[in-house]
Length: 215
Image (cartoon, rainbow, N blue to C red; front, side):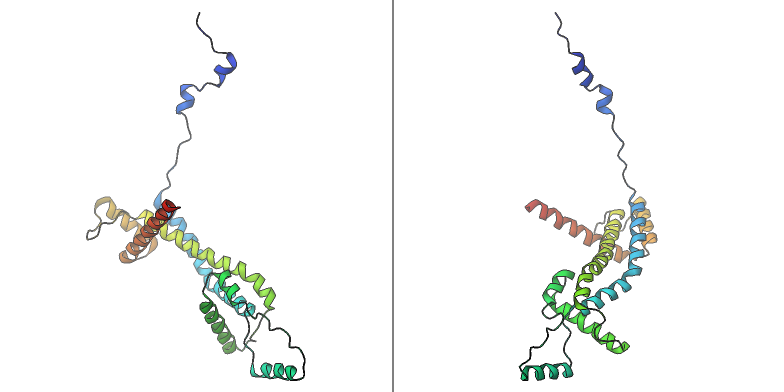
């Protein structure tokens, strides 16, 4: 007697057509990806000066503002009278600010001094905002700076992906030469710059793979 398969089980068995049917995988055109990445980078790059100025202004206001000679004298007078001096706004925040914006403490100090010099030249007060309020807004200002950097990295990776492979001492020929010309036209960059970007992206990719291999 031939064994039979229960009806409810037969309905669940995949048919040959179910096994081979799947959604087609679309491979993105490297040149289309490059154009999109360049548009985004160009747009954000145009916003960078304003974003950087805003970040530096908040950094200066959140940072400890050096005391003027008059302020120092007032504090000495209070101290001589046995009075308690008020805390200096922003004192001791340099390490926290450095961590927040991903810079060294020396760079934070340089940015702070540069911003104070700019304000002095422009006839502006040494402090434009409350230190605590400035510190609370600094994180978002840095995120906007980081957004530009991320767009730049994505643009460079798209350039490296769109370029034909490079062999030292040779020039691209045939379809590779056509592709190189297209990338050059899209980016407006000279060949040496394109190859540096490609080499840097390749080195980063190798480092990422090595890190994953050791993790």
